[in-house]
Figure 1 (tube, rainbow, N blue to C red):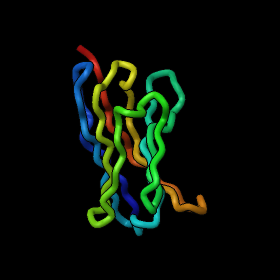
Figure 2: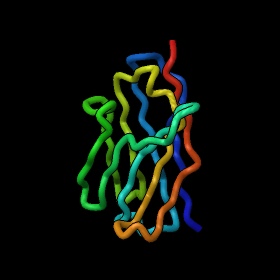
Figure 3: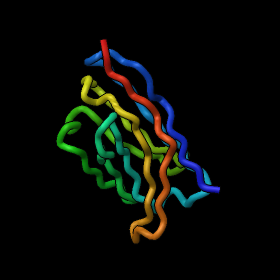
Figure 4: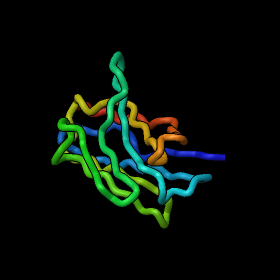
Length: 117
C-alpha cells in the first residue's frame, strides 16, 4: 500500500520558519519526481516546488529565495524548508510523487500551514 504522509505544519508568525516532511512507503522512492503543492481556501491547488529524481529543482516565483525543497532517498522522505513566511503562504500543503512517465501518481493527505500574528 502506497502512503505519503506529511508532517511539520502548524501556526507560525509572519517572518518565521517551518520545515515540512513527506515520508513515503510502498514505492521505489528514488525513481519518483516529487513535489509540494498548496491550496488556500477558495483557490486552486498550485505547485510550490518540485524536485526530480536526479535532484533538479524548480520553484514557484512566489517562494523563490524563501523555500528550499530537498529529498533523502535513503529515508524515503522529502522536505520543504520554509523561511520568511508570509500570511499569503497560508494553505494546506500536499506532497506529490509521480513517476517520470506520469503513469503513477500519489498524493499525501495534506498538512495545514497558517501564517498569522
